[in-house]
Length: 189
Image 1 (cartoon, helix red, strand yellow):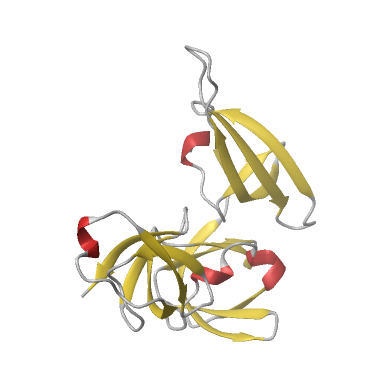
Image 2 (cartoon, helix red, strand yellow; image 1 turned 30 degrees about the vertical axis):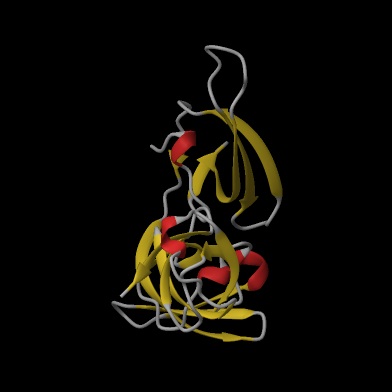
């Protein structure tokens, strides 16, 4: 049973006996002493796609939905459809872009560390890994000696995701990005 503070995009929890997928998690730290951090979570019903917003304290427990987690590979995109393949029995699963809200930018073709969440044999959503490796497609020129400063510059990655990266990085380099925050983590050599 996960705490509200541990929820991630794509995770499926059970509320009122129904499966709900986490689409967005926002934390708010109150300014008064002794107050606990509040987590505002946007859910989508797995089957009906109904939207639901809830607020939780960090220590609140939620129940995992009774679903199967299988390792899948992101195969390819076909229009608004994203195709995944089960790595054990080669079953194909398809999700629409609307089902992957906020996750599409972290999908790299051939990526194998994704979990598909299956309810009654049908894909309900995916869980992204903690980090994903991507190439920098476009960024400004590197600045010598910039590693000593904490300044950043915008960069466009291979999936179209735009993030801030340290000034010493150049186009063509491979970096690791944190999926939960969309921030630069480290350069991959």
